[in-house]
Amino acid sequence: MARAVRWLRIRLRSLYEDDIPWARAARDMLLAFDVGILLFVVATSFLPASPWLEVTDTALGLVLLLEFLARLISTRKPQRELLHPWTWVDGVVIFSFLAPVAGETFGFLRALRLLRILRLFRVLDRLRAISEPFRRNEEAIIAGANLGVFIFVMTGIIYTTQHRSNPQIANYADALYFTITALTTTGFGDITLPGTSGRMLSVITMLAGVTLFLRLAQAMLRPAKVRFECARCGLLRHEVDAVHCKACGVLLHIPDEGL
Image 1 (cartoon, rainbow, N blue to C red):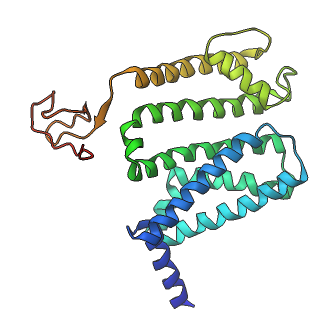
Image 2 (image 1 turned 30 degrees about the vertical axis):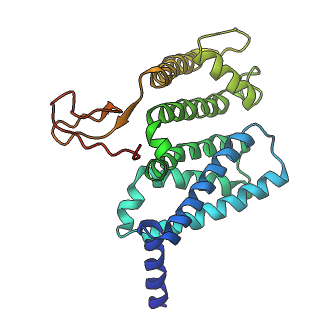
Image 3 (image 1 turned 90 degrees about the vertical axis):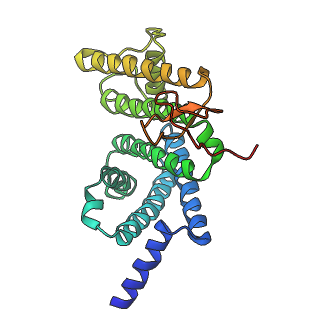
């Protein structure tokens, strides 16, 4: 038994850590699975409760639980892994997928599932390692990801806090509609959040949302730059054809594509 556990731990460490063909292919499959889960979470946020959805949730929750346990087994320091914020996020999301079996409130669970969108940042880390086009446009893509995560997390918060007491927020579509109109400061006025807590949510949505939107516009419109840390001063962004660091003048060796 101990030998089998040791063999399993070695194989899982190879899966998550080694730079060999089968391990890279397996990690890419996990990346694709993460993207699929993200799309599923967003799409089903707008659907009413149904038996097929609960069965699908449970199946996905079991798969996520197996992957979660595999990561714990593979890690060299399980205690540190358990204290990591991503571990807590994954644990909450796994619970939200499995809990319908115990008859939990569906609306609350849908809000928890939106935490899975935070996994997008781990997807971005993987894309940074494997995709040159992503690295060239990293700043704009990450700014867009930040805005998307904010929109759907705020939608989940607004729906969870308002749908029981505010007749104007009857479903996720209403919550998303309000989030977008508040973020863009359009403010049609057909949906409002009453009370002090509602006003505070509106203020947070407007301030944070506008900031993230402007950040995305800035990243898309500014001249293209590459990310390469200067060995002397640490400056991270340089012009595409830079030879010397504009901050300290040291000679740079920015890798290119051989063009």
